[in-house]
Image (tube, rainbow, N blue to C red; front, side, top):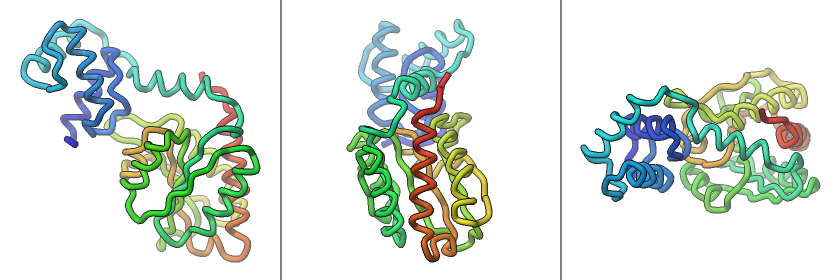
Length: 241
């Protein structure tokens, strides 16, 4: 797939004109191609999914006539969150870990299953492989767990890049950080936007929780499972304007 700043700019231009090319992630995938085709059909030019000189000229011409608005992909993502069930029952939650945290994932999966959620555990060292599996399974939300040897507590990351961010991911990250540090008795490392593959390449709201080794000593895995489940409950029940 084509990747980079040029693709992100294309996604921004399409989204500002009302053509949904998916999240602005700099990846020319199926969603971006669909957005290009939709634009080309509406512009009355050859619909081939190729962004050549004619397509670029029409994009610039149409954008010059329209005041920049909120991206359609952002609006649709928010609407999906707003209309989703306010409970975890029946929701598909993907849990991802790249090594060393299988017991914590198992404890979290058990807690979530008790709420009626459908859980898929992804154990793979490669972020892109995990993202592809979550996308193929059409997960509603993804929670990744990572061990950080340099950390003294826990921190949570959500997708942010190319002047955009995942609103659903950011809200979940904030809720996890509101519960997890106290539950584990560790320092609060806060939330931050990142563009790592697991966050950039997933189509659903996603977060990655980074943990110090000391956070899971003793009964830490069960405390982690309870705190993240509580955060996911609050996230599912949140009012999205």
